Length: 309
Image (tube, rainbow, N blue to C red; front, side, top):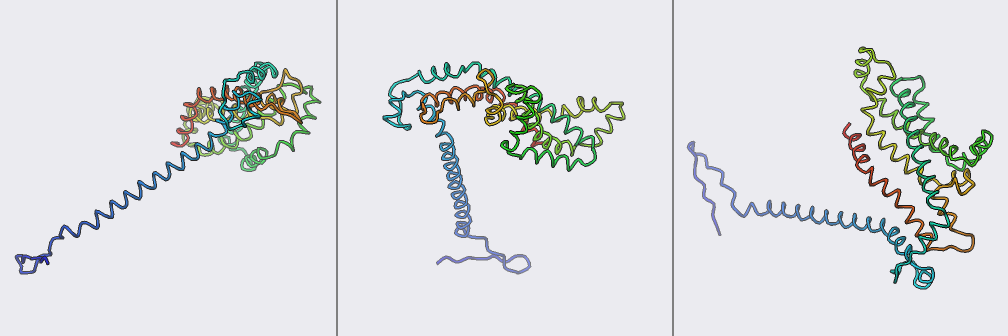
């Protein structure tokens, strides 16, 4: 049994004994336990992230497997089997049956113009609401938000009727106008909230320098919100690219239809060529994937700049 000796101090009071090495062990053990728990928790989070990633990638993997599988092999082995040989006729059938180059051009043309016009209209509307401080701005922003939440099924009949009356039936410009307004409703709601917090001192300084409203917009406001506009443009392009219901009703001929409608045309009421459909989905995904890879840095910069501000 060990004893603890104390040496009296100068005034005669006994000194406090120094802690022995055994008293430090529980503290070290506690720290080691905390590190162990943190390590185990991180491994659980990593495992959950990997599991979610696998679940998200599984439809894409199944699509790739069935895109290069013959119809006979698909019927015999099922959709989850690995193709025994590379079957490319599904891609060729989709390319020729749907006139894919024409559908690709239609999708790019419509999506690009909607992205540009929708972003420009969003900027002008949000500038008038957020910086111009027009009366009833809160109600106007709420109206834009409610309009963006309306289902397309409720809008299709009046839109189709108006397109027929103005001579834009079966015209790509009808789709461009419709989705420019729809996308601009969301863009206006987002940008109006951003511009509503714009520093008034900066605008007043520009006005004292003799800048008008248009000069303030393009030389003061635009450079600051440019990253946000880039993000909106990317979103508008992808959203319009994936639209199906309104283009299906408004565009009735093959030379005006888009890629999602071409994919739907491969499916019949009583039969479906699954390998050709999967091959078409894979081919249709490639342009959107290339677009995202090209503008990935722009999207990242825009989101980061908005978070920093």
